[in-house]
Length: 408
Image (spheres, rainbow, N blue to C red):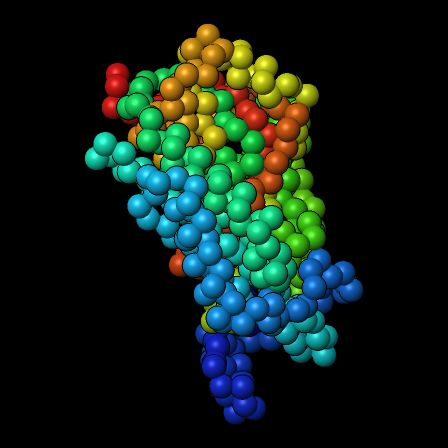
C-alpha cells in the first residue's frame, strides 16, 4: 500500500488466503486510514527477453561436479605454477507474479546462470591471482561447453601472470585511460546510483536539480537498458509490472532522465521507466539500474592510449565505494598498466582511482568506438538488497583523476 511518500509493505512465506489477508491488513495499517485513488495499471507487454526454462535442468549434479574437476585439471596443466584453482557454477530461476486490485495479473520467469573461475600462481615465493566469469539469463549448457570455459580459464591465467610481474603503482593526479566493458562498473557506481529517482526526489544526489543541464563532456551519452535479450541485468517487466525500457539518462552530456519506480515517478510527476526492482518478495521495490552503459564515440581506442603522455591504463576493476550525496568514489584496479609517452609499460599493482562522478564526467576527453558490455557477472547492492545488473562502456580517457599507489 502506498500513500504519498509512505509505503506499507508486508510479506509471508505462506501462500494461503489467511496469510495474504494478514499481510494486506498489515500493509494497510502501515500507511494509515483514509481513502485514496488506485494508481493506473502499468501497460501490458508480451515481450519475453529470455526463455522461461529452468537453467538447472541442463545437467545433473554429477555432471556439474565432473566439469569443475575438469576445469581444475585443465588449469594446472596450462601452467605448472598454478597452486590454486577456484571455479563456481551457479544457476537459479525466479518466478514473479504480480496481482493488482483491478484484476490485472502479470508474470515473469527469470532464469540465471553464471560461471566464475579464479587461478592463483606462485613463483619465487610470490603469489598472484586472476579471475573472470560469464553469465546471463540462459541455461547452464551454454557455460558448460569447452568453447566457453576454456577461454575463461585462459583469461584468468593471463591476468594472474600479468599480476605476477606487476610493480608498485604510482601515486598522484594523472590522466587515466579506462578499458572497454567491465570498467563501466565505475560509471555504474559513481554516476548510475546518482541518477536513480529516489535520491533525486529527496535531493540527496549530486545530480539533483540538474535536469536539462550539461553535466558531462560533449559526446557522453549514457543509457540504462533493461531490454537486451539474455543479458544479466535485463528484465521483461520490473518488479511492479512495468515493462523494461531503453532509457536515455545523459544525452551528449546533458542530463535528460532519471531511473524511476512507480512511487517516485508519481511523486516527481513523470512516467515510470521500468526500474522498480527488488531482491525478492521479502523486499520493497525501489529505483534500481538494469544494464547501464555509455554509448561509443568516434575515437580510435589505440589512438586514445597512444595520446596518454603520463598516466595509467586500467582494464580491470575489483571493489569500490561511492558516496551518493557527494559522488565521491574509490575503486581498486585488478589489472592496470603504466603508460608514458603513449607506450604501455609495466603492469602495476595496488592502484586505486579516486575522484567524484560529476567531475569525472566533465573531464572525459576521448570516447572510443569500441563499446563492450561486461561478461555478465555484475551484482548491485542498495539498502541491503542485491540485484543482478550489467555495465558497459567504450575506451575512455579521463583527465586529472587521483591515483592512489605506493610510489609518489
